[in-house]
Image: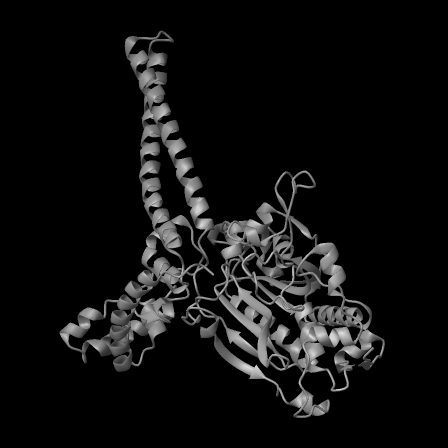
Length: 560
């Protein structure tokens, strides 16, 4: 997570308190919630029209009940979860939208607890964009002078029948100078655009208004809990005296844990599973894939090595390169680019359609894949060093959806629900969290985490993370779709008087897709949850009912 600047937070909080007080006063008198108030100060868009109407109706009520001093504060936009609403920026940021909405962008970066460097990057983009606009005007003026001079030269040459005069020479020099001026400005523009692209790539996604404000994982909101943590222990005969074992001890008792050999050949944070435990891991993988396929996801077997540009598309790069396993160029490159092992199947699945224009009628697209994932865990030194919770290599079934902005929220909730159903069928208690602004991922505008109950430590641990990135990734990988023509525009238009037909309506312009991803589920951590929740006091492990068909009917894994 980016470093948190206490000074900038304190300054922002002062502004938040003042604005929140004004918003609360207006809301309490008008009956209009903060979200609707916020949209009244937004740039018009399809999503905000209804809210703006509501605000105007409410404003009439406000004007008749508040004092002149209160009315003066009504011009301040309301805050949602301690930040300005992103309603006026429904899309991800480009240089222009950032410059036009710099106050909102800085508010969201502060809410994310971004570093001073990140805040300065946003301000620099705004400054460079202003310079860019000025340079474009300067370049266009130079090109216009060149064209005017060239046109005059041509006219005079025709009049003199090709004989060059002093006037023609002067005009030629002016045209040449104007062309050089335009080229010089063009070079400056290219340099600015390169800087802007680099800075924009370092900025995280804007937050959905539903994301709660908070410093870290301790501020995440519990949306709901499922299951009774005492149900399986009661069914399996646990007594009050029984202390549930860690998953690695359970696996060792089953004869399926061999970490020493793995560490000896591969180093720390690698594990080797054998026998019934390895078979149980495979059963979990197959169960997850089958369930995803039943929900309409297309199974994919993607490459495990991807290029730098693919990782830039899904925004793992450039920010998180130290967490990736990079392949040396002498061994392999991807079409001349740096090559990396995938940190998640989200990367190849989403990039299957990079630089493409899809048809709206084909959306949503839903994909799933079982792959090993490779993560260096550079920022996790000393954390979760025991067992399977945090390893360099692990299996995961990933689910990805590519959809439209209109169906984005619905598809996000569907994908999250699909992950929840896997845990429910396994009868593993879990809770669903809405991640706060200081904990949500770099590319996500809204994220739900699912955490499974682990009896050994009596705590919930993350087993799935389901993110809606909006069009943040799609912009980076040029993933677009063409909206379907409206019914009245489709087909030939009715003939006009005189038998003439109207021209066919133009095809709608392509717009950016929305991408959604989530674990369905992390296989290693699910194995942890199964081993711990289904252990018996005598050292055996009962196979969950839904996994028995994948275990050849085996019902109990016996202690060795």
